[in-house]
Length: 311
Image 1 (tube, rainbow, N blue to C red):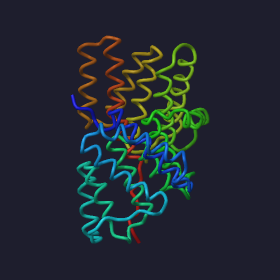
Image 2 (cartoon, rainbow, N blue to C red):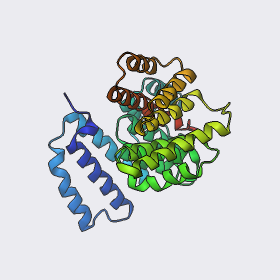
Image 3 (cartoon, rainbow, N blue to C red):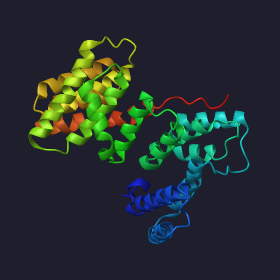
């Protein structure tokens, strides 16, 4: 089976080195010995890449100049109306590669912050969370306290396996609770992804904190204005945590609750039916995790705000 670009170790290595080079240039160290050493390391993985992989990385190399306010847009530039129309179509079809190309030809009146947010969405959709995080951070460089940004950033960083930098914030949110349901659900999901890899009492204690935090949220508020999509995600996170601590009946009830609030999701209904027909501890646990994974990528997209493109 052909690997996705993001699953190719040579692609991952080159992307990492490309980002490192960009960071050095941003610090005014583009001509340093360290920068030269990084560039030397880029040769070997580059020649192992396919033509399509090289094309995507060339595009990323140009996109990264946005972070130093030195991006050069590609000609011919699109008219504003054509830009909006093509962007809308690419997003509707999740055509993230095409969307990146459209952003490189955007008209000058498009806000830089909006372009950065859209780039973050596109790179995340393509399975490249590390560059996605760079553009997300750039877009919010003046407003890092925004709860939507914090939630999306935690989820993207988790997909990049950067738990070390986000777990303190996620644990604090889960412990302290609050009124921002989006932020609590994102933090609970990040914490769940991390604790699944643990073992023993520390794992069970962390899982119980997740369960308690989500139970408290749904007991304290009616959530009349909360999107059904988010409520279903919360129930699925509870379901996985409950299953992990051995509360299988409660886990299945949480899965049923997710289906009840979002009955149109046929994937969830199929998983529930499979568990009814062939219920075993192994199948049940794997199926519930599969149900949450089904929603996880969609959760990041739903959390990302609709950017104001221009005045």
